[in-house]
Amino acid sequence: MSLKESLEEPVSRYMSKDFAKVGDEESVRQAAQAMQRIGATEAIVMKGKVPVGIITERDILYKVVASGLDPQQAKAREAMSSPLQTISESDKVADAISKMSKLGLRRLVVTRDGELVGLVTQKAVVSGTRGQNVALPELARPEGVSCPYCDAVMKSQQELSKHIDQVHLGPGLLEGNRTKW
Image (cartoon, rainbow, N blue to C red; front, side, top):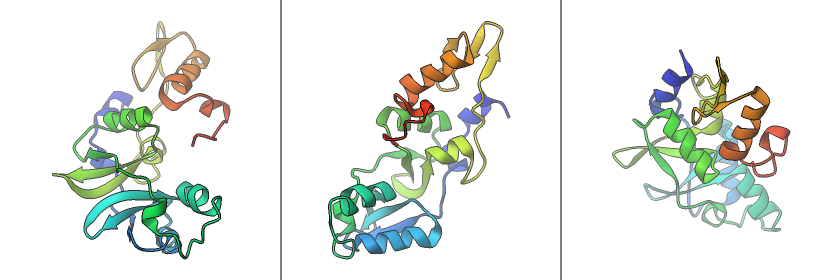
């Protein structure tokens, strides 16, 4: 499958239906245990049947552990990120990549008619860890190498790498600076 074909596929092909959910009044420790049970790095925080946020390993580390809070006492709602960013299951993979890139996120809640049906991660669409992967190779053209995100043509792979780093991912990521991520 070509890059363009992969980017045109629906998000539903790359979303996970198996994700952790925790109540907003549950402790951060309970959230971490729910994540651990299924091997996830995030959990959707629910208030009743309504998703209200997402709690990630990073949220737990920075908002709870680093702040000196007790994970058994701190509530999931206190450590979650909110509001949730969503994408429709029928939207294209390219739209999900673009939205995550623009918002500086690695996860989007997938909806069908406004209802939570899954979770899509940057890792899933790029590396295929939660399903099939989207091919994101550098496309060689006679005049250079094209960006898989915006189709801009660069003279070399190094120039493309810098372009993706600065425009689509954020400064420093491709050089190994993972502080933002």
